Amino acid sequence: MIDSGSMTPFLKWAGGKRWFVNKHRELLNIEYNNYFEPFLGSGAVFFKLCPESAILSDANIDLIDTYKAIKTDWRKVEALLLRHHHLHSKDYYYKVRQSKPRTLFTRAAKFIYLNRTCWNGLYRVNKQGGFNVPIGTKTKVVLESDDFCKIARQLEGVELISVDFESTINKAQRDDLIFVDPPYTVKHNNNGFIKYNESIFSWSDQVRLSNSLKRAKNRGVKIILTNAYHKTVETLYEDAFQCMPTERHSVLAAAASNRKVCKELVITNIPTYRGK
Image 1: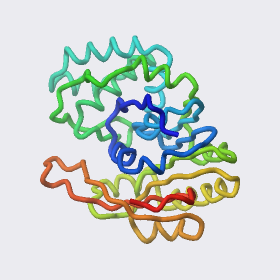
Image 2 (image 1 turned 60 degrees about the vertical axis):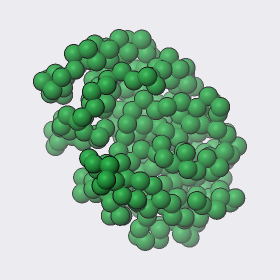
Image 3 (image 1 turned 30 degrees about the vertical axis):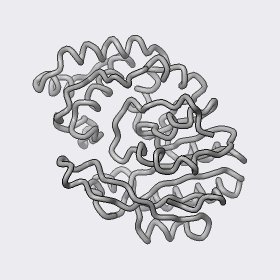
Image 4 (image 1 turned 90 degrees about the horizontal axis):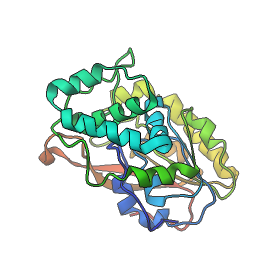
């Protein structure tokens, strides 16, 4: 169930689910044993639930290493982030973007710094694996909401791994909860990053995901999935899950006036949920 000590995610993430945890609290207010999240991103649902036991994973090893660094020694990460805060400028941003820090903690501080000062918190790399998002308009590197000590305590009972999503889903057993938020690979309303997402999460991955979740359902796992509101996605799940549209505001447009309402699908096997 939702923990009264819910926390604010420390990362901004394209496709993040802060809107979801605010709009669908009743869906998250359920009993479960262990928590699993195979596409971690900013961890909005994890930080809302604050589960005692969890396995969090993502294919992005830099992301997972950032969480590991905070869990291991949050003070080191915070001190390095403060240094970035004091030195931030356009030239400094591109200097850091090109840098290749060697330690777990310097890599984590770089990751958070770039996330907070790049364009809209977008994570994108070139073919050589180099982060290539331009500088954004935000200049605050250290935020009032930061509480890395509390985050580190929450991560104490968490296993953090960088693996394929299927490996994480296969570990979930009866009465465990899986929250799944994969990269979207089909167009819906106003998603501007589909072409890029197709290169990192293909349609065959979407099919493989649906099959692994159906197997998890048969094991008695509780499942909540968000995906693009599109018939091709719905056909992957409609025979085994409830599929309900929901709305959110796009936050990826540079100007607020261009941020349109988007529809997404909430897919679940929790029988009491009726959508919103």
